[in-house]
Amino acid sequence: MKYIAFLRGINVSGQKLIKMEVLREIFSAKFKNVKTYIQSGNVVFESNENADSVKEKSQNIIKKKLGHDVGVFIRTISQIEEIIRKNPFKKKKLSEDETAYVTLLPKNTKIKTPMKSKNGDVEVFASADDAAFCISRKINGKGSFPNGFIEKELKIRATTRNWNTIENISKM
Image (cartoon, rainbow, N blue to C red):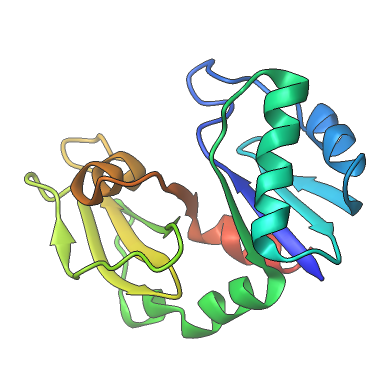
């Protein structure tokens, strides 16, 4: 089965730095046909194991080889394709000051939408399949990243990707 591991919080503001070459190397020790996509920690690979086992192995190998405790969110290619098929952004007309994001949530996370940050720079307008669909708005020229808002509101660990990144990963 083809999986994607979305790593949380690597290569952000100089924290938990992991080169994609190294990430491919350590994933290749446990999985097949490993590819990475951009520096935010997206790994496409194949395994005959179930998603829970793949997640555990991924987190353990990163901890063992690199010393980083990293949240790993595992999705199958078909799950990502389903998220793209549903694409709630096509019903939205985004301005040039708005960016579309998908936040991957832990299994069976319940989320009530819409949710908005106090100043309106982050809006979670839909959710499905353990994913939240978010819009980040620039206010006074500054935008926000939805991940922190969602983690704080729901008291969970999550990881967020730009909608374009999700689409590009599905094509790999």
